Image: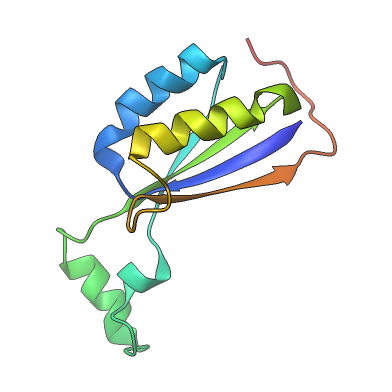
Length: 110
């Protein structure tokens, strides 16, 4: 089993992506609002004003981080589904995807 972590910058496609993941066999995901360091502060400006700017600037884009636990047999298909949905992860400002091994899984997923 693997934990796939997707930091999705193209948040406008989230609903379509979730539908595509369901069709692929994914039964659940945890979705977290997130902001990358580069967006939280201006590059080169590491000060308290970076945090203040985040509070004041309501238009600042945020990302969605998806935590998706999948069986090993689904990993390649889920990766392809995500890559297709974002229009190619190799393109800038689409998202970042990585996987981690899951050593155990307690609980029941419907």
